[in-house]
Length: 300
Length: 178
Image (cartoon, rainbow over all chains, first blue to last red; front, side, top):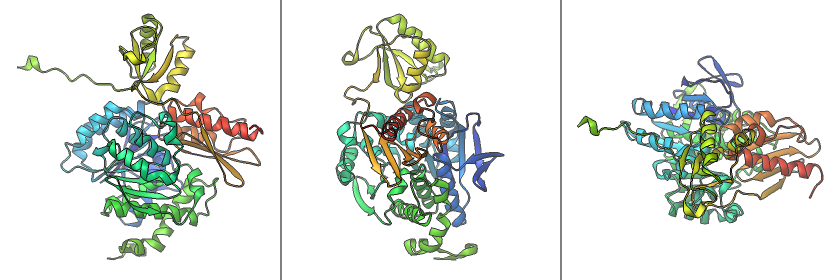
């Protein structure tokens, strides 16, 4: 199972658990319609499009409404702490939540009780909490942008708003320096995909790949285009790709979808997501050697 | 040996401190924040951070903006809010501006806000990771910079505070400031 957990910006949405489907522009679960916008909605949408294309089981989700006051976030943490060992997902994605260090610590302990440890992916504030609690090495994948990498490289910061100014000023070309610092402080997951003008794939502190084409700088302005990368990686991991390959293909697919959508800074993330099937159809076979044709026929 | 088994006490690691001139204010703050649903605890501040009395309230630092707003509304006196970890930098004040031709993107910390140069309409916000950010995103998109709600007023977290700084800079640029 691919399990995605995160908050949704609908204040009164109760804790909601189950398999996700889509209906037009919305995600649907238990009768609730979730907008496909920046945040957990974009992660789920990207993952769902990918699992649908690959004819895999749709993602399961743990969602709760939260507009910043933390109640929904705590419900998600407490549910996962109680149930994750029983569910034992193959891939677990932790996304938009109020970062709580002690709850993250308890969740990591609970994950240790799973029959087989899931591949753990963290982005957004779940990544902030993992780093702040000193638990980054418990995770398999982090997907920071340049500022968030500076946050991981700053041993004292518990949120990117408090990073050292010199680290914030660091140019993207200095990514390798920040990676080394973050690795030395044990503040990075086993794999990092650093999102930016150039995407960097880092494993155990070493930059193993960079992705720079197609160059679509407008993507940085579009809310949710970092979230889509997280959803893509999660789905490709669930499909059985190695983390390095999953990261490279996710970065390529996201850029290519931006090109297909003719992205401008005013583009909405849903317009990028709807291009993923077209990108997969044209490029996925060549990128992975795993080829799916219309109707789900498979050519290995 | 059942008497040796104790129920595990729920731990709390907030990473932030509210500092006070006197103990009464600290205790009042604990009550106000607990009543509002915040996870907090009274602690003795580290010597390096101590200002005023020797009692402080530990908070989740990420919730600093919402807590500041609540304490102001409740008229509770405090000296300052700061990170618990000694050596943490000050809150980021600087911003970066990217010109996309018809649009300008302003980045403050981990948050970005983009507006249309001609109309002054907010076309996107991106970055961040706290749960108020998708909510604020929905509230800002399509609004004029001058009419949009301020993230610091409708948000609760440090991500919202950074987005507010980006909006402030966008307003300055839009209104022709330096």
